[in-house]
Length: 183
Image 1 (cartoon, rainbow, N blue to C red):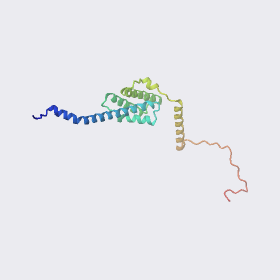
Image 2 (image 1 turned 120 degrees about the horizontal axis):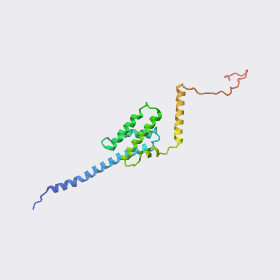
Image 3 (image 1 turned 135 degrees about the horizontal axis):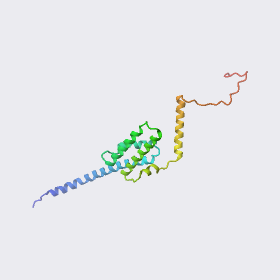
Image 4 (image 1 turned 120 degrees about the vertical axis):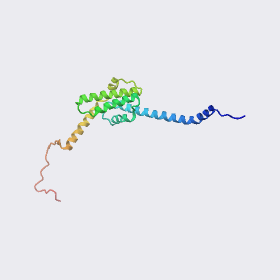
């Protein structure tokens, strides 16, 4: 009585031998996918948290990471990349007056955040994104004051502004018998 190995026997052996390797590959794939999702989520959350502070280093860094983390091969991510390209193009446009430029920047940012949020599973609408943020008046006042101080210091250092001085009294004149600088 001989032992005959069939094709199904070979397939069972192959499946038994390869299943741990396949499981590891699937685990690695899922871990990478989760990490990529977490990086996108971090960008979105950072932009949402700093949307009222467009000069914040965190805000700028998150914007600059969009090209790194979003892919044009995924439909919703491609839309995010297109909206980011529009915003980036606008950020370098100096032809508009400040109010129109600022309003357009905000509109483009809201569009970007809405697309990003939708793709990541959030259901924020444009009104929530635009208006649903707490930003203390003191923060904007502090930023304005810091900007004023910075400009004044630069003007002083550049020589285009003088430091105002008022002399209220002169030191008393030395007595005629006093000699200055001798011991």
